[in-house]
Amino acid sequence: MGIKELFGVFSDPVRLKMVELLRERDWTPSQLADVLGLSRPTITHHLNMLRRVGVVSCEKRGKEVICSLELTIFQEMIKFATKYLKEGKK
Image (cartoon, rainbow, N blue to C red; front, side, top):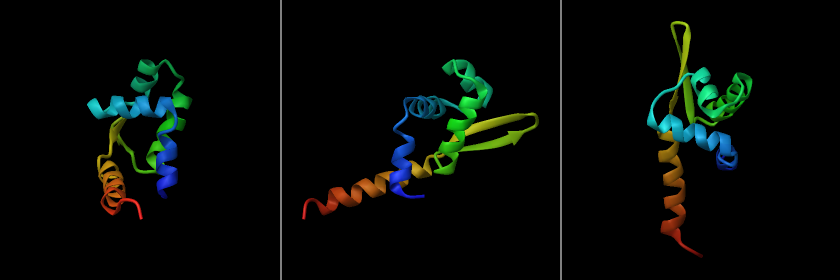
């Protein structure tokens, strides 16, 4: 996963809203679909994109799929940004 792909997933307002919701608590895809007013296939599509770059993880618990925000990817983004802030313009 490259930084370009990671930032690319944040270019969509739906995915940004999903990240905001997942920051507060874990959600099922059905719950996200209900809250966002979108179809389950649309939510699944966006979740798959977020999962591919490591922003979200989903785990099956019984009959439910529970999706969670992965904070480590945000720590990596901070490291990436900090590197350039420390180096400054050259």
